[in-house]
Length: 177
Image (tube, rainbow, N blue to C red; front, side, top):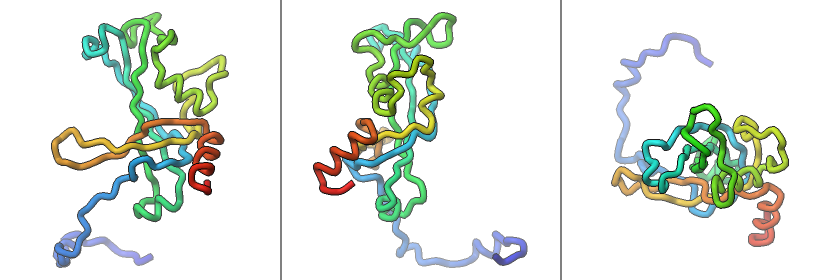
């Protein structure tokens, strides 16, 4: 590694042929199936949108998955491929207020229930969101349009499954894991 001070001004004067640059962003293909690991979680109250949820108290949880597919990483020229999964979690009251918990009743918080099943936390007697971090599962992606009218497409998680069952289903469908 060369030592010395980087001279940005000199570097900035280097001319390139901008007509030869590949400006296309290549997203994760639609319906990509892969083993993945949860790398981050974030959440926020959806109280301001309560009318959109038929008066229910909800929060939004964003799950970030890192895809573990070396061939896809090579194809997309990326060291790390992350896709996000949005989950609406029903609450028993206003997010952040004392006594408010997750609403586990029938047809409530189903995305969270599916996620817990996929990563094997459905039998955990002390579940909390932090236990989801670093868990592995099988994800299937989908494409969605950008909301800014640019016409760009983005990849997101459409479905999560148990890792072993996902691999088995993928192998049966495609003949490889």
